[in-house]
Amino acid sequence: MLRVFVLCLAFAASAVPLPSSAQAAGSGGPGCPALLNQQFPRLQDEKQQSLCQYAGKVLLVVNTASYCGFTPQYKGLEELYSRFRDRGLVVLGFPSNDFAQERGSNQEIAEFCQNTFGVKFPMFAKTSVRGGDANPLFRELAARTGQAPRWNFHKYLIARDGSVVAQYSSMTTPQDKALLGQIEKLLGSP
Image 1 (cartoon, rainbow, N blue to C red):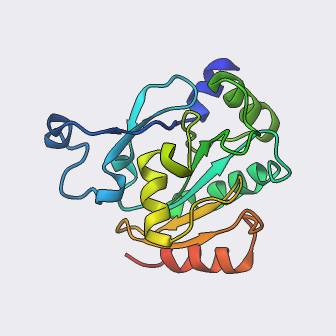
Image 2: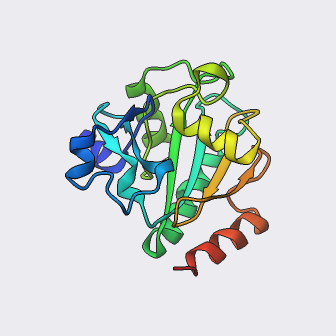
């Protein structure tokens, strides 16, 4: 079960810029949008992962928490990921305790996500997503949209070219018709 768990979950959060040697090796080359040219540790083992691996995909970036009224959105996010991943959608989860609802360790968070909601979409280590301590990805998302997360399960939709298309409040569920319509539109674009 642990082996399956480790294979199913994927990513984490305190960003580390890619060294130029990694860029030269293809991790952040010319096909990687600037927004994605950074690394974060995976949730389950804290090994650094380049976001450049998602270049050319439609991304839904979400700050998450295990003890929030919106926590059941994990199920909808996993359903969304399962439904559209073969067409190029990737959900990226970033647990955060910015709203005092994610107190566990990375391992505890990973186990909760897997055991409670069967999360298989990439998850990153616990991080800050707002204010001066926000990780560089969330700082840039807030700057581009004019909106930092106001609560857990805030969502940012990113097009295949790395442009930020929209942001959605915690109240927007993964099954929201406007969100689904925008995802479908982006998945249909080259």
